[in-house]
Image (tube, rainbow, N blue to C red):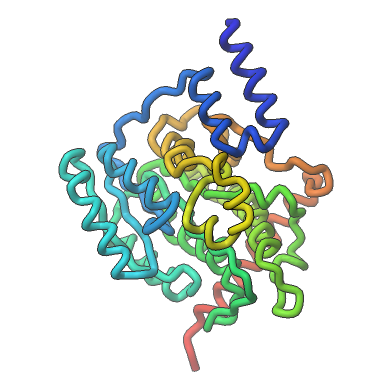
Length: 331
């Protein structure tokens, strides 16, 4: 009992400090005090991971293949994807799992729609769909389909994938897990400001707003898909040392370098969610270091229950409109 009280006290102290919670300090202390169990076998599970050729997505794929899962890696660079798949084959042979690559540029909704059709044929049951692909851009970038790239990757493509794979997810009582970021804590959802323009674009703000929008999509997926046995969750990796962080936030990476989490620490909770029994898990929660965390840290970012419900419905309607516009047949 004393150990349990100590673990809770340390966890609460870390969470209040933010830096202690998000850096490598968090998992080091929590793992020891909470006596984290090893990951169970993932044999027989079909798991889809977007953004799986580098950083956290690649590390999660490596661990899950090693646990015996049939992992479907989604990446936009075919050469890089094939190299990753080749490197995973030895681990797959040893564990009885498999690694399969699927080429897709998630910034283009037509490409994502084709991916859905491909996965529908290739994967009859999806136990876990992991939305990990990310884009933190310095400059405003509009795709050839007329969509700002950050929103295409973080909001619209996950909506296309999740809705398109409902039958496959339902067949396995599957989970949808979205990798979020601490950046979302700074933003209050507002559909009117979600889509930034070239004139007012700031990459970190666009990224944070898209991550906040993902919390509402997760709510919508749970409301709409729970009757099919599908649950949706969010996971925060903490501040991890990845190529993406180095490239997008070089100053942050340099200053925080010694305290950044390893990729293994960054994906621990993701892998734990994907492999452990989630039957008693409340859908829609945000997880960090194997515990649920608040979706808001600042009062100014909160919506009332009524506002949140309306915002969720408005976001889904907006997604439908933008997806239809981007994927409609050319004249």
